[in-house]
Length: 268
Image (tube, rainbow, N blue to C red; front, top):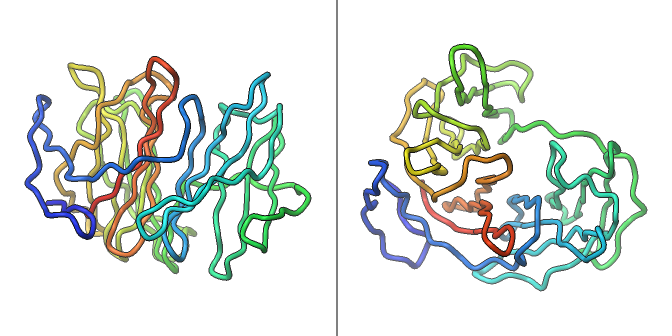
């Protein structure tokens, strides 16, 4: 059972045609314009940060971010604008913030990873320096979870695994999918024992973004539908972040005018 975010009355999940209950999430308008790509979501001290690449014309993109806090978005700010971003690379550009309020921006340009920092809330940024590729691991202290998609001879699978030693070793993988996954996996620690994993599952009607809880003992909750999604590469990309009791989700949808970035919150 999922409750809506603070201030909203809870409702029962609605069963949809695939037979998977729909997650009770509240969608919030996002500041991302149509046609933007490579969105990223992260938790910060007072809410969440959403970053994305916004087209500027003539093959140029701007790395832009906005802060969602106290129920509203800040005015989007640009970190850097370039014509050589690796838009379809293996790692999405991002803007994150540490506990002291320092902002860190990360992006790929061709095959080179770059980063920059800001100590004045994004008003100014350092000169870019060489960055590193980041693993898909979510951690709280020394507890961590990783989630991944595997395509093998025995069929596609989505797994998650927990770690007690900051990712040095992981426990036995837990099967997450419903039998026909196509990837686009994300994992988030809800607490020290429980994680939430999202992925895209193929259905008779196309595809669905689904979510499922799993705990360190291998127990799984029911799968829940987040939204309809295409199964072609790049569709249904999902990111998550947790702030207080709420989980914030971001996913992409390919529309007739370009990519649309959805933003929502809920309690899992």
